[in-house]
Image 1: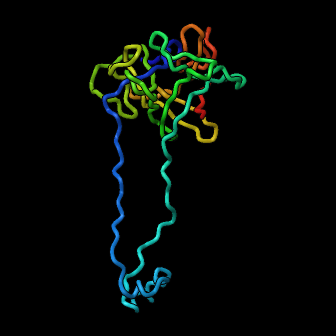
Image 2: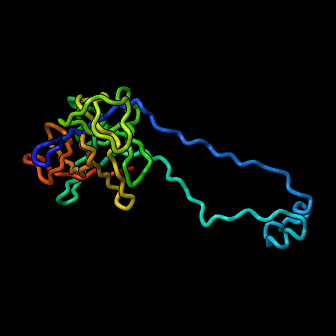
Image 3: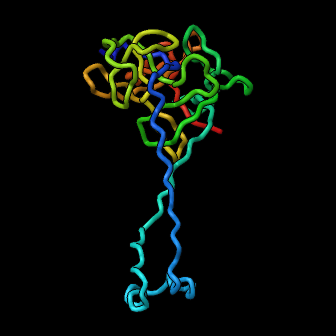
Length: 224
């Protein structure tokens, strides 16, 4: 079980068999306009009573708004100290013993893509040859029950760059600040918000603790 006083989760990539659900495209059908409407370009502005009097069908009900779907974005992940907001660096593209660490350079930043949402969602790694998603793996265990990890699921042994049980539907996004936050779902099904920590030798971690001895607490931000 994920314990507040000791457990640490490594930030890493997670391979999922479920690649996501693609939305079906919507199609509009085009019909010939009636001769009355064709002779009167302003027919669409008439009231229903006037349209009926002239042999036209009623106008289609209007909508109050036309929602716009937020599109997928490609970003890097900036790491800042939680104490003062100073930039530590960016998540590095190369793994170190299965874990991600931080780079101060600009040429080896991890490139990711996701569709912004308040959560939970997955972050996909661009050009990943082995594991597709950024997530957590830790000491909590659960039996292998499925080849995919839906949103809200407990950790599953489905394969990742470090080993052990893992989760990837963990991320939330603040559109105002650009901050990425996360939560871990215990085997019991209860979610726990986690904090991020960094160590030069062991990389990025997440824990339910607000403090973790020897590690610098950090925050993660999506940046262009």
